[in-house]
Image: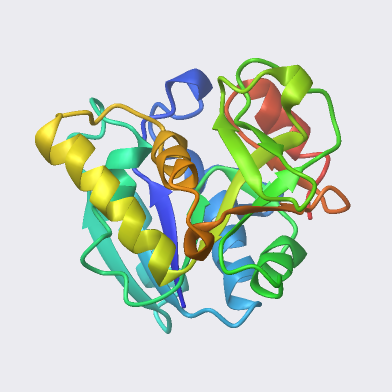
Length: 242
């Protein structure tokens, strides 16, 4: 299994904190977000990483070289990171994925047990979902059926239909990824649709309604996690170190 970490963005909403440093290198307590993420993944037996970088990427590469030289890292550079979104960064990994993929955004503070819960799930394709807490229009929300099969995912999901929020950690099979990358190829190469959240492409796979690519919600609400988008998020994260 390979872990893909997307860390290309500028993180404008966190300025001035990110004026001179990528968001993933901001410290939460005595360790930065990226360090904590890598440790959590390694603790679950995964040692192969693909890291998509862009903004101030040399700082990230230097940090990895100094602190995780014993792990297997492939670095991919998103040169146009200011003008595209995470769907483009994900698309860049398509020729490097060999089998199953653990996908993570690089701005999440989370309990390592969340990764374990996905890996040990009975489902080949699943997403970590926090079913507690208040939902708003900006969150990536999911709706499900009685079997935890995801029906809809995205900011556009109606709050009254949503079971919770996708926290940005997903596990995908090769079957799912094959379908996903065909969709991303079409959008990026044919339609020049580079500025989109990857959940829009997840939705297209879901809409095919093929059993081999069913995507399931895994409730991780018993574990601590927070996505860091704003200064308030950053300050709150200091109080829930996991």
